[in-house]
Length: 636
Image (cartoon, rainbow, N blue to C red; front, top):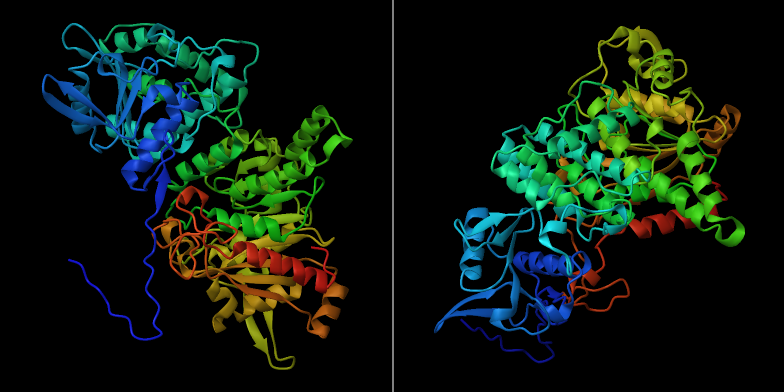
């Protein structure tokens, strides 16, 4: 139906928002950015960047049609030819990307391949992938570990040397595909699947970093895969087990149980190895690795104790609002997967790299190693999450030795012993220049241990004293206390008296509720409040909780100076973050102009969402805080 609105005098015509588009990687034509088209363009990019096929060999738009006699079949989503001669008899690889279900998609792929001379086929739906080879004899199709790169034979797949490995263009998809395959074929709970994927990713990384052997041991050939599918024995399983033993030996702090094993069937391990083997995780850009790892971890980090993923905008906000350098010790006492620590480490690495010609590359590398070893510490009560954080740090070239598992609310004697046993050095009060954390919060899992409660002022009852009209601590212990309140005290205690700084995510109730006035009194008596940034309601909804929160920034100053500041009614930076960059479903939101058009950072309309600016005011808040610091002569 077509509707037309008559315009009154002075009324402007309505401009409808433009439909988001994506650029075809081959023809550069703009296409509607449907989920199916995004998957297809991801695969085209992989064929060129990872498999080294030229754009002249590939047809996408218009889609290639297959003929069988007078009948037309297709069209083919992606057609790869043996050379730039794009005719039916020259078809080499056929790719099907628009069928979501594996069985339906593979059947469609085979129907396209059957009347052609195409030797290989790929089915890819964005989160699952299958490679097949066409054969002359029944059953006429067989799964293979991968398709050959340009100029490579099927027999050469899996016989890689370290120098042959290529950076991955879409590691997030690969990780997701690995996870989905294990989940569908092993019948394991998601947590178990997660741990098994992590083991194999870690084995892959360690094999790459072994420069004493130019050959890759993390590999599988087409012949080995075929023998495994036929139930025959070969060297594959023993080779991977040997690698895992080497990993456990080399990283005893990550794999503390010497009897830990790979709990997957050999065909499943073979599939995961086939998906990962050709990539260099070392040479894959750190932002690609980090995004993939964070996205992969995020889906598994929701726990009953209130653990959840800290979204990247919050990591960025906390790290960028505080100044710190190469000699400043940093801790996260509820580190989860290590997001704050990684973001802080990246900031220091940028500082080291920007030293320019003043120092050599070797000196820069040494400075980074010294920084990660001496200055980064992370603690998490969940040993599985502590291990995830270690792996996350190793992906970013290390810093994992300072991470260990313990209850951060325990006594300093227990923390010190666990840290020393884990090789993480000393953990002492007043010893960290920077603290960044998002502790678990909520009413679940209250602390009832008197041994823990008696260590904390906030583990005691507080009452209003008539003579002073101030809320003060009593000698009476509480029956229980929620851990997020005790965490505030522990965090303030950990930062240095020499102007140590911290950023902590807190529930808004602590800042606003009348019953929490004693907590606010405690905070004001121990530290200077630098800033409070109110976060949108949707900040944590896509990641497991709808709690309304704020990011609280504090600085510990000498007591005499603190008393002077309070007497002066010192300024505090206050901000409300209204746009976090995504909605309650986690869908990315882009900036738009008054006409509803998606725009880039400069305000110009774009047709490709990859060029669009994220709709967030995080950068504005960071900039405003820098101005606030300059105006108030704050060195924070």
